[in-house]
Length: 126
Image 1: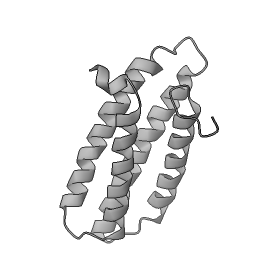
Image 2 (image 1 turned 90 degrees about the vertical axis):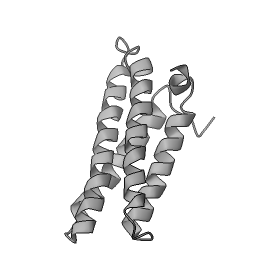
Image 3 (image 1 turned 90 degrees about the horizontal axis):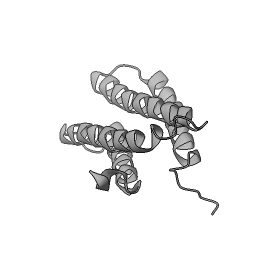
Image 4 (image 1 turned 30 degrees about the horizontal axis):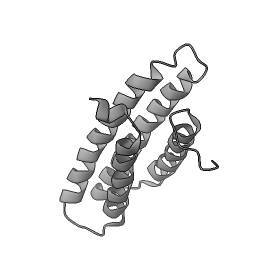
């Protein structure tokens, strides 16, 4: 299982594809349920790859101040995925989903902030 935690490339790839599928499904570009089902598969892949990274690096930083940062990132990532699903379910049922869009944006921002801020994240300035 070393391929899951050797780098963050697999995890980043899953959430980028997941976000693309989410915006395709949310925009209604594809009317089929296949996009939503593929997105659910990527939810699982995001959780597996992120959980493996959390297990490898989040647990090892328990004595460090960044340990709670990994916990927060994990929580915000799960909440982001939950809001993605709520946006699509409410949209498909024809109900208002404005609050879920706002929560999605907030949680996505916080997840990305923690993801890039923590030691395992990428630095855009270097």
